[in-house]
Image (cartoon, rainbow, N blue to C red):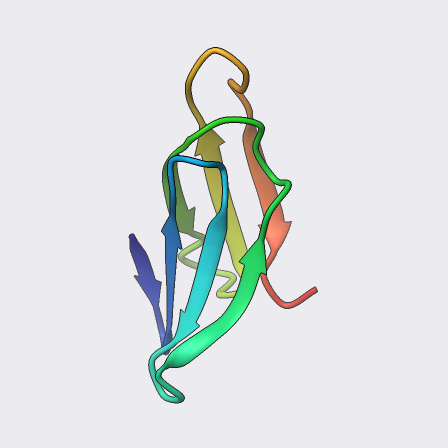
Amino acid sequence: MSVIKNRVASSSTDGKIYIWSLNEKKEILQHHSIHKDRVKSIKWCPWKSNLLASGGGGKKDHKIILWNSET
């Protein structure tokens, strides 16, 4: 889990990434096809609050992906 401003990002073993709004107390975004295997780590960029890095693990996915959480 990674927190920045009013948003929390979480990941799962099936490769999905979720972004939650702390103000609205609900899920605001869900990505299904970013990683082909479990997501091992996620981290918000400290100087650009909409940029999220995610790292895959397992045998099928050894990628680090940077993506805009607002698009």
